[in-house]
Length: 533
Image (cartoon, rainbow, N blue to C red; front, top):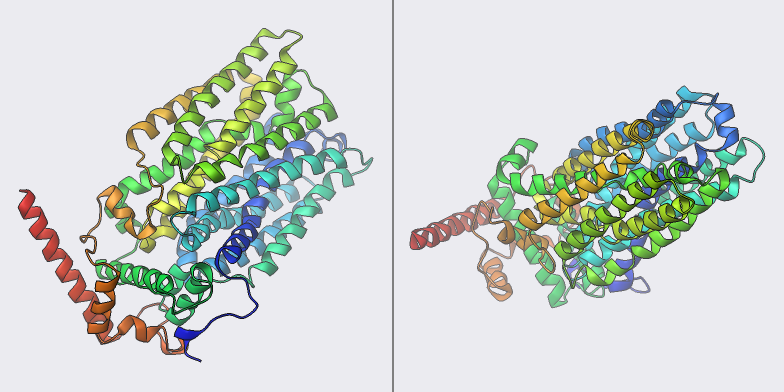
């Protein structure tokens, strides 16, 4: 059967497939959230402290934060890996590495083994936290991209909440299983993602960028046109993506240096969003919530219980952005979140400073308010923003830099929090309140609004396209492709075996198409520029 006429029978297509795939790949960020939260309850448990010979605050900080070192390293590597082997296989290998690291932690016989396991898990988390948002952005239509990314972040927070309640339940176990069982569960969930990654499809943008056009049109049709490869929307989506691919090939290199030279503003915005997501103080709560509550007057298991209640509110707070992000936009959510978070952190600081009978209750209340507004704003948006503002040619590399920034600041916060809690006590929360205010200023003056903008049109928002945007509509593009010998349409009806998988060698007619379109657009850009002068 010709690829252009294939329609699935009895399989998920359209929105059901889109939402199923989005929710399933969210297991990747679920693991990230679970791993964030699972240590917060474990490190206060009596059996854990006894087994590891009562580690100091500095030792606990190193053990918790060392995961970020592994994540930082792998997130820098995965940009190139994701471009070469694809988004789907990167998820597969990332989940495998995570499971191995979880096994080291589960069966740890000493602090060194635990640290090794944390580093290995960090490698897996770094791969998943980089590639899953890229995967998500590349399968999502412009009008649902924000919602799907926010659903993905909810998966992260559900993972965090699940780990806290698992810690609470396991705290009733009177043995070392009270901390080994929560660590074992992350291996089981990682295995599910590993198996599932062999079932989900590759993203259409990666497929077309690597000339797997026959498979690409089928994936596009399944996601956006009910499986009908002849549907006008499927054809239009295919043509827009493929044309963008051809123009970007005409631009040349795709190295990190080239990305920095051409798209510096986009890269800096992407990196800053992830940096402030950490500097705004979330991991003071995520990693060390029981310690925060103990500092405020709650003790032992009660501190874990308060953390669990906070986690439930945290999960609920991530739902409103599903419905707001594609209507209000990204900027209003970030700005409003920064204001309320700064206020909440200031009140946490003031409550602990007062040290009155109401301090424990006030602290819990403002921690919950802070968490709720982080979950609504600076939680999901920094994972949505970088992959959507970066062009296809460097999307994985740019996302790797922004995610590496997240892990670098994640490590700093995780390493310093227990130490600062001892050194400056209540003043630490004022430091993070200051960063919330700084993030408000940054967003207000430098972040453009991207709601409803397709990934292929993002260069018009930033004004950094190296060739002028195509003026052609869908019908004109169809006619031009037809006049070029039906290059793109021909490619949808041939086997992938007949293609150059990594685009190393191009057919002469395709190269002619690239050269001619690029020359025409440069000439048009020159005319427009001359008219403005």
